[in-house]
Length: 492
Image (cartoon, rainbow, N blue to C red; front, side):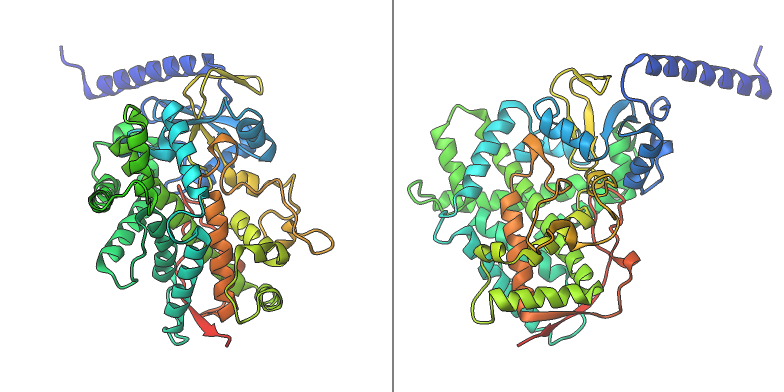
């Protein structure tokens, strides 16, 4: 006998109630840190505001404390909040929390290859090799510092040609920063008008935007569901494939003129490593391609976004810009190019750059970590392979370490005599074993680019900025600056 409509609804509700109670019972038996009760299949997705994953994770801290668990689909993710907790995990217990976690938006493409997304011996080999190359300042005919200085001069020339007009600085800054990576990886730079270069940067930008969009966030939280749903997140792999095709062409060009006795760039150094370790699969072609892709992502969008945020902040606080100009004029002057040795004599400029990085939180949730073994942490049991999100924004905004964590204040990095001082909350490059391989390069770029531009220009906003305007968006994977226009007014 067929069931009535009412009886069918009642039966479905009973079944759903049974499934939920069974799931809840299984979930509660685990000794993971506390957190919102997940639903079958979707986990805690409904607890997270659409397009505001970072803000939602920060809200959970108020209810569940500095260590809690959220479920992305059926995968538990342990979230770490605040300086003390993040330090204990990433620094004090670096080995236990030193794995690379899942990032579903790109995992199917990178396949655990490359410097950033690999694990185990593959990661150790690639990281050791990449650090050696990036620290080898004599690679090729120019040192890395000279490459940055040269590009800063090209960028200055581009801004002079704008004749004090109000412009969106984005494409110029991205081109300048990307050319530093191109010089290191490919051995030369591109003209800003180069069509191939423009397309390359456009693809990088679209990948970052799609990863940080509400669609990208949903894919990271519900990959098993989102793989069947059409949307902008589907463009990510296609863009990554085009980027990799471009890199393949450059590798082929290098191979045609390769001289193992005279390496010109990162590609040549990788080719030499392949000859030296022919039986080591960690230096195969795909690891080369993914490592180059990692360098571009880590070294282009993050540094350029930091600079663009920095321009906004400097224009918001004219007194900060005035102090920067005074220090640059006094230490560097007008007749020479700023160099990295100047930084130790420019504590205020150094403090401003550090405070920009702290304040803007370019990667607020960090790149996901994972436990490398079964871990007992603060009384909870975290199984091997569990994804871990160390919230860097919660470190940079820790009220127990900073008097006013939500306000831009260079004094956070200055002592009472005006000298530069380190601050424990400074973790924009992460910390521990997974600290960014390009940290030294990024710091050098931020200092030389910013001081060179300020040496030559006064930054002027098209419309005055408010405190609200300069706040980071705190939405998804990365904090991309809001759109704005500004003028670069020559000082000399």
